[in-house]
Image 1 (spheres, rainbow, N blue to C red):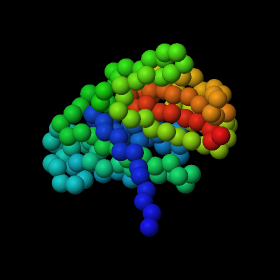
Image 2: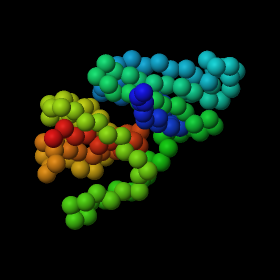
Image 3: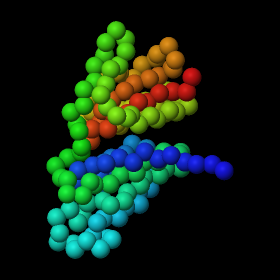
Image 4: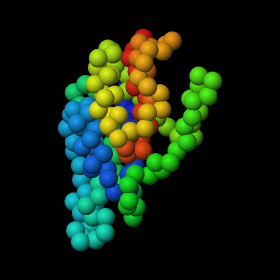
Amino acid sequence: MSITTTTHLNFRGDARTALEFYQAVFGGDIIASSYADVGMPSDAPGANGLVFGVLASSSGFRVMAYDIPGQTGGSADHAGTTTRENGRTATDRPFFVSVRGDTLDEIQRYWSALAVGATVIESLAASPWSPGFGMLTDRFGVTWILDVTA
């Protein structure tokens, strides 16, 4: 028996835009259904929002996203607090999305794309545990850790 875990991100009206951005970064295919697709009147507020969205790539990257019903105006909680103190990262974020690759070149490509409009918390660089490690919060408010397998 085996299981798979998939990060499920919650947005406030921009889930489709976020999935398209992540598709540009990681490749893959998007499957998405709006609230209107599942029966909400198409003229109702939020009908174009995603009730289900998933991006899956052949490399194994997979993320799900949906728009919180009745919530609009950008992604939830862009204002998390993150600081660097004495070589340690302190944050109040409830989770990070971690992407680990086999080569620094691969991780640098993902990093460069995710960094557009992002806040860099820790620049991508060699660390004691990895040939490349970095942390950023993307323009949708999602915090990512990218690193190379040691």
